[in-house]
Image 1 (spheres, helix red, strand yellow):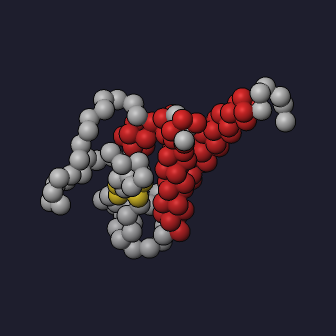
Image 2 (cartoon, rainbow, N blue to C red; image 1 turned 120 degrees about the horizontal axis):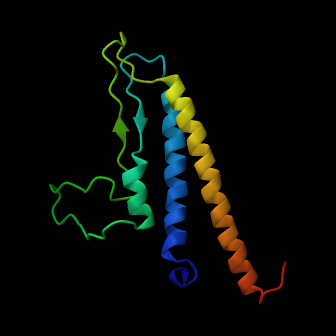
Length: 137
């Protein structure tokens, strides 16, 4: 039933919201650990993961047939690859968190989350409109 009502784009946009929420948590953690020695900032490589979430690019069915096989990077939007940022050579304590970069990342992420949420809300409004035989509720 859900495959009938919700197309692949709708499901993909829901996964984008989940990814944005995960990125927000990572960025908040980065900011909270900005003074922790040897802490490495983390982020989700959205360019790669979003392609898998919304189904863009080539569709290559990859599956692990044995436990020792390596998963394709960024292939699973529900469990995205998380990358670490290496500290610059001048970082005395080995911490790679740049508060300015993280502030920009959290602002950008919030704006994009809101945009996708608005888009999904409008799609749901269209579905409600269609379900009510074109009568505004």
